[in-house]
Length: 252
Image 1: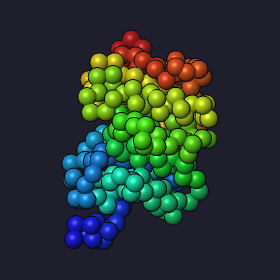
Image 2: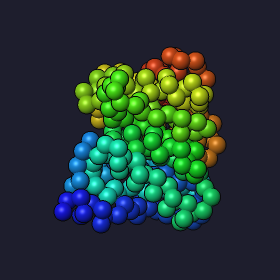
Image 3: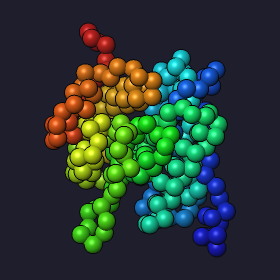
């Protein structure tokens, strides 16, 4: 019965975060956290993990035509080979195209939502992926590695706290290293001393996210640290420290 109930539910996009732009020229799809295995309805608290970032992006990008939506999954679990959260992320990209036409899409995910963003990054409408503290499975010689070929041709930024106790930051470094072999436009920032929620350096993480997302969608110039991280060979560009005060105006 639980499986039947899950099948009957459908993914959906939440209403636009912030005031709607008069004309949409870019879309952000926010992918909340999830669980490794569960057919239960998504937690009503999960979207809170992406709302602050969504509001910041909507505010800064509205003048350039940004539409920002939270993706509501069919269920809260990844569920092994079903990869349901990734499938819902792909559906959301299809829905963005249906609503807004041929505009670039950025997938922004947190935790298990970041894993979904990375998996669904190969969608034809997606030009960029932001993965915050991505939940990634432990590497097992008997299991296939997380895919990375779908990220070719996309700009990708991974942000991970060095004190993350939920998902090993070394796993996201290894994934980024494999992806960098076929995609120069990938970088990774380490938030030193921060944990899974990236709360200790929240302002810097938000500023970095805005810099990357709005630069990727609308051609804004990236900040110097992001430019350097994208240009640097591994491992330098994949272990870039997020400086305290990033994004803060000089003198403050």
